[in-house]
Length: 383
Length: 135
Image (tube, rainbow over all chains, first blue to last red; front, side):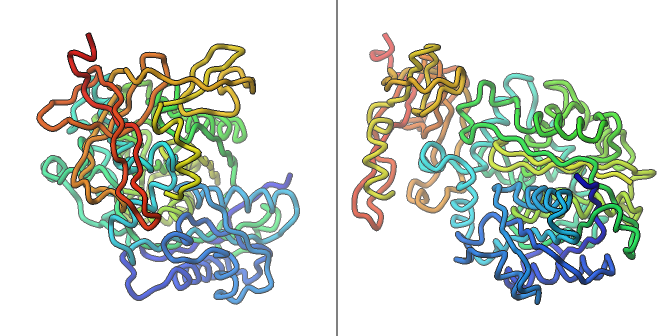
């Protein structure tokens, strides 16, 4: 298998793009990634997307985007792994390049959510859960995470306010990212006063509904010297799965697919949690950050809240997370989020993260979680 | 929900039917074709008693489409007495303060009003256990 690097990145601002369609967003990010690399050639297109069929009435999406971007007759496939679709699309593309099937592969993560009313988007997102035994009973995604959060608070004697530092951190970092949707800092008082979605989860625990696209051009590392920008190596790429229904786990507070995919990634990269300079966590809800940090070995069970309380997740902490805003601050266009995370890790490792730059960043991890921890994609990037 | 799908699920929805593994005796809800513990395929149907305790719960204030007519409602994860856990709506909870660990029992209720298919969907929910039933 060949070593693979990311040679170009592109992104649209995450926003409510009333005037842009799903194809406009995808093309904008794709062209930006090719410009960034200084390379026009694309041998294959991998689109990460979750909801185009349900929300836009459009499947065969990869062909739609290849057509709109002027890439015909290129090979084009959509990859769907719920909220982890963007990360899974990079995994598929990297395998294709590593195997020698393609030289230049383009990954586009895209989601268009704001054309629809909240109850429709809530129902669509619940399709990542078990249709018969969760969504079919009116159990929304926020509700599943709320039950986890309440149980976590019960087992570890935590208070809701203990989760505030995660949301505060994501908003503070988003304020330094021109592509982020929620660029306002928040305080602990704002967090406490935020309206409830599914108790104990409130609006500021939750990533918002939005539109966006992010793109990555990848190539064999041996080719990467020809590019305009410094290449960033994919040191690890791993996927793991767990039961779709949360109730069927032996212990719902242990996110085993997160732990398994991180373990596989550490082994591929021959690195461990201590070697990671920054971690783009899938902070769809504050409880997800907590369970992910514990599953990935950054905190012992029940102690991730302490990590945040001690300020260790900030840009100058020992494990900065959500450095350009995360899902909470940048926004969570679900199928695109995994691709945004990779774009942001590349920005950090190139030293192009501006006011959000993590000093001397050499190794970055990005983790994209689909369902309530049922599928996890972990990438480790290195310069 | 489509009629054939509802028909296929009648055992789980009406009788809380799951599976029991003939090899390792593992009890599973909902039913599965392969035992997640020992990977055997020799599973037989098993109806659960419907009694259990509340593992966790929440109140849904932003219901998904199809459930907005319920207003706000409670949902929970219930650890059944026989072992498995099930997620469901918690009925008859108005005026009761739900608590982790409280005893609950299955009831059959309306899950969804008649949609375009024209039939009303019934299935399991759980409610705080009545004293007489719990005695």
